[in-house]
Image (tube, rainbow, N blue to C red):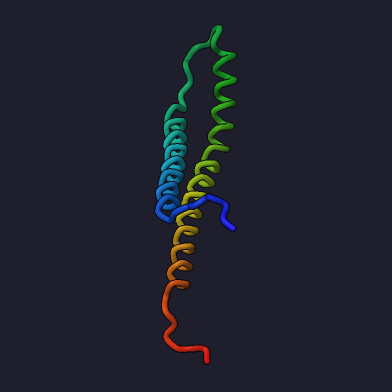
Length: 101
């Protein structure tokens, strides 16, 4: 029985690399967010916006690093799957050295 779906090892390796890059992008966003730690220096109308922004920024700094690590872990997992599938494919195509008889 065939499903008509064929996933090549090369495609999985390529996508693993893309997913890892997305994780790195998230981490870079966190670094940019950390660099913007200063306030706006406004004590008028924008003071309320600044307070809300500060709270949102702290929430993002607490959550996005975990997300970037998870995304990178998925990329690593895809690379591992690709390697395991390749090793399994190679193992089933290798000729037997000794017979079972």
